[in-house]
Length: 378
Length: 119
Image 1: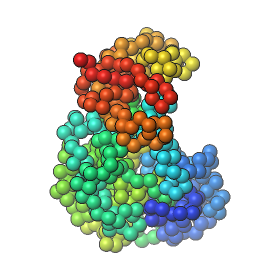
Image 2: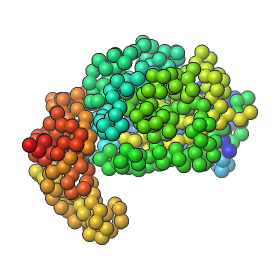
Image 3: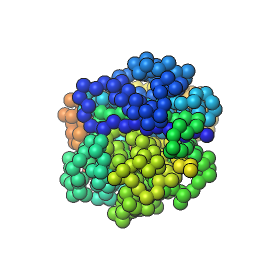
Image 4: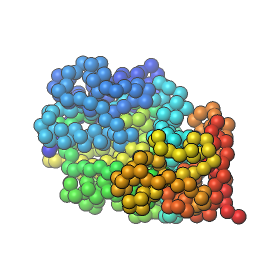
């Protein structure tokens, strides 16, 4: 058994003058305080990576900087799936008694610490160095390829994809920490600059500075008892050229294993936190996970199904698309928001019932997947 | 990668793939073994350059000065007639399902495979 006992999140956007370690520290401090713990009680650290601060031992670099001497520490690298992969590992470490209170932390000054071109170029390196990167692709191009095929097979349109950007922006408007504060429409998305067709600028998440952290503990430390009910991973490929058919991608494998591990069905889920690097990512994952039928996710957005007051509130902080994406911390914000919702601490964003949540992360080009169920225990 | 033949990734106008003598699987990324069954030394074979478009994405925003000079350029995934899938460039108006054949063009200081519709 393991519990998420504290969460911390900075605003996303520009943090001029803050380093990756500064942003990690800020989020870590918030999470430890939220758990009601002292720094000295943290005996495990898992951290992600930073493209601005590449290091072969980032966890100990952070531990020294932050002032902790943990008995267990290392970095984890699974691209966008890193946050949930760390949570899964922390869950198992706590459950096995390896550590009592594990700090999971991610943060990066990706926006102000390097040029936008440098960020885009760094991320394009998830492609094959000889057979893909030589062709001048970008991360949006990898996902643009996936989008073209998905739209072709399931009759999804660009207007359908735009609905997800509009929904995430609507949710971000209710969160003061979000990177974007101006409402957008489907027409705005359609008219935004082409990036890698069919994806346009507003189909893509931004580059952000920010940090997120949480504490995973063996026992609850406070009133809110949010436990990891079950989780699973799947890794089918690294490069999009080597990806299996759309119907055989890792999200479906991971969710099937996670459902079995947790002993729950999709119909039990009350809140969803799903990776949304691009509108197509969110559309596909919702359908892969069974939160919508094939080609039907956009219709569910239009019907309000995924809105704050809908049947399946989704990424109520605004997701990567509108809260922002600072690398590893990006998708960790989904878990922080989920925790606030489950603990009924989300204020003006509070949903009716978030007693059981499904979280899903994706790294690479739909390469690595982590599905996780969190449950509120009374 | 030492056994990768002189193909487009090395500046030669050719697409190669590998075929496993033990299980018959084909693979595009060259290795010294078959990724399906593990048998050593899959045979390098030269592809016909014929195939069908699996996916496309017109890149309008590039990230380096060298590639920016080429925008917009169309990235494609091609299902080769020989049974492997590859990434390449192609005509901007290619659609999924189009039958295509390969030629080669310079791109950002290199040679890349470029697919056009079979007339």
